[in-house]
Length: 99
Picture (cartoon, rainbow, N blue to C red):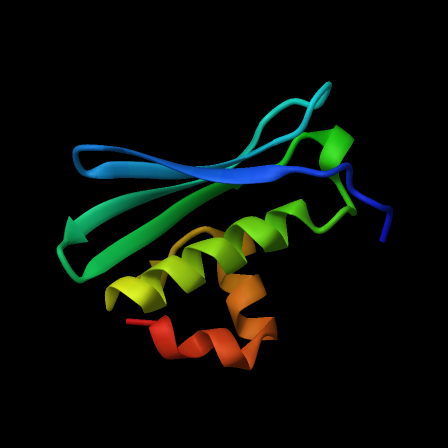
């Protein structure tokens, strides 16, 4: 895996939609989007990682942040996004948040 530039992940929420965005200077944004279906359930529907980020673990970091926040908030996740679903499947310690 290539070394990723130092990046930050922020969460943006607007009504029933939300996203986590990874940003680094000189790099395009990577994101993971979700829908809020209830106060205790979200659906991860998309993870988008530009080619410049590929192989650097940024997509995994986005999913990990979503899992950590869901756990802290007592929220369950339905991972419809194939990438997020595969990452959660590969990391048994994240599976406690699955709906």
